[in-house]
Length: 79
Image 1 (cartoon, rainbow, N blue to C red):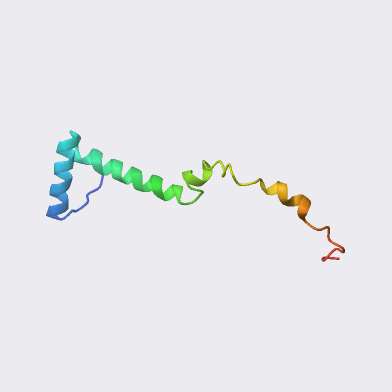
Image 2 (tube, rainbow, N blue to C red):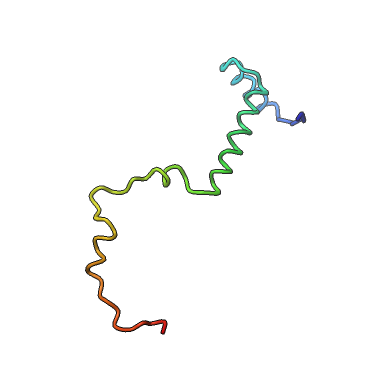
């Protein structure tokens, strides 16, 4: 898909300098920027990588270890 975008001269010049420094076409930089933006947007719909990769705190006792300290309910509150 082809389309035109308009950049002010300062932004266009900065883009041109970056493209030259990286030795890639301006279009390639713009395409990468759009891909990065879309990937970032799709990641915000779910859990972040930091949350998904978290393995827990080794010094913190497991949640289930506290179950034995709970009192048994005397009657069913929903009955």
